[in-house]
Image (cartoon, rainbow, N blue to C red; front, side):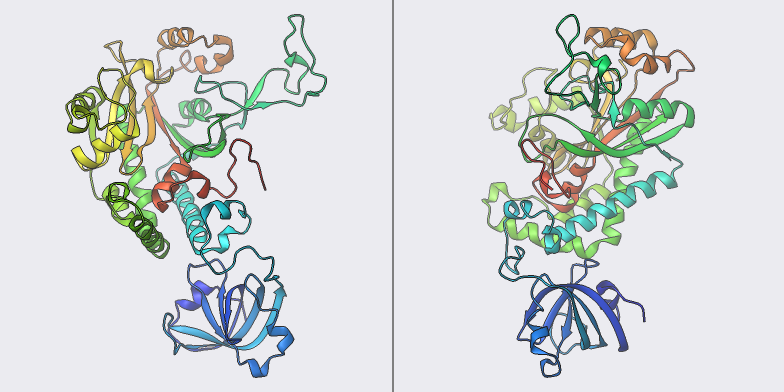
Length: 477
């Protein structure tokens, strides 16, 4: 007799004489009803114990958090809330749980408290739902790229280059920090370090992915990236995951097509496969909203927001057109925006992006052709000399979720752009080689995976959508 999952048993509508299941106790009521969960579903299965047939000392060990092994008969349930239940024939306690010290008791806990118990928080309904959705989204991402002819590439985590040109990177070293070698100028002598040069944890796999796209055609990365930004906001992590496809011979419109198709696919996947978890988190968000002032409530329910993306075409709007719309909007004229739009060239804030999506166009928006001076050096310069072929996808509730561009494929233009921001050519000689040997139009984009998980789950703090968050002054677990 093989052990079954709770999800499997709850899907049954027939009596099964012998079932075998293992899991963790959520509650044990009246010395008779065990609510058992094994992580396969949000729901618990009720296990009914005839306490007169079991040793009292054994039943005293059936506490919240204990791991148990149950064998019995699956029968139609007479109680409310479930179709089936298990009439327990044998019960074994695999691992005890002290009710005096077990932190995840059957009551409402704050998210702050649960972050301190990150090793146990997935035993709550909220975090088990979030992490099942994270897993499903990850699978859907790989499935999409696999079905569309992309090759999965593992870009290096340790790198000697700064893809963003923005600094804020974690150094990688095995030098003795109590006796750091110095060169003639009194600076750290990295020739004595493990790699013989200054190295860091990567902030992006994009540049390396470009090199593979220019031989394999279509590639994507999906891996951890790191940023040493001293920020403790609800939107920043020091360690996070990025999805970064790169495609040879694809221009900016093709890049927009790919990104829209990709986003709709992964969201549709969880709508079809994770309905139970989404409905639970949808209700959780609505309950949270009831406790907020009207102005702070979400304009759409969680599932409505996902369908808003999957069921609408994305509106494509140039940055210049967007600036005109925002400059002439009521919130801007009445100074309701926190950041007033005055001049062309302003970097948009999430309040502006959300206005375009939620109020003006009422659909997801792709902005393109941004001012060159607010975008990265590797984005292709337009003929006007002022804008680059960048694109950002804007979603309801959060604003920008995807950022991408057609890459600068012209060697001399790329050299000029690097020189303007003091990136030495020798640091990226291999990247420049792509423009010397068979250069061609190519494009790609980046999606922060945790931003996507926040959007799908309705969680408002990025620390709650990754198993073990890494933030300033916090590397617990």
